[in-house]
Image 1 (cartoon, rainbow, N blue to C red):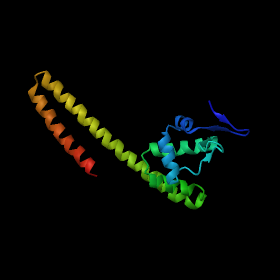
Image 2: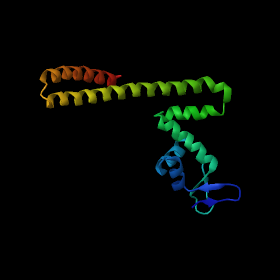
Image 3: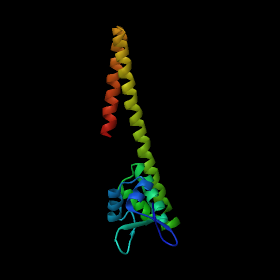
Image 4: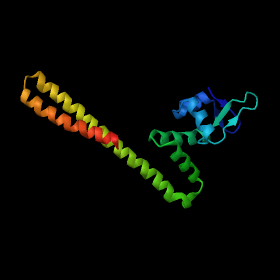
Length: 154
């Protein structure tokens, strides 16, 4: 179910959305703000027509987006791609900064998991009638909750 030109397979916006994992509305928005360069239009219907190259480009944008990278950072990254070695240091910084944000997110996620595990342990001790253990675990949960609160403030 694709439209075909002599040289290259093309896709509708719905097909592009399925292939890239981005909603059609997101594809249109990304085109409007310049994340996706001008997409060709069908000469008769004026609908967007995505080429294989467009799909590959959009997949790379989807990957950056999936890391939680901001639109501003993605725009800067894509602007630098054609600059080559001149922009290498800036590209490295954009990517390592995003990686550091992911490391922090992972740390915060693990802390929240630890809180949930501690609360489950509390309820197990409580249900078994071991009030002393439940109180000890409850104190640990309070400490972890404070850590969670502090991590969210940062």
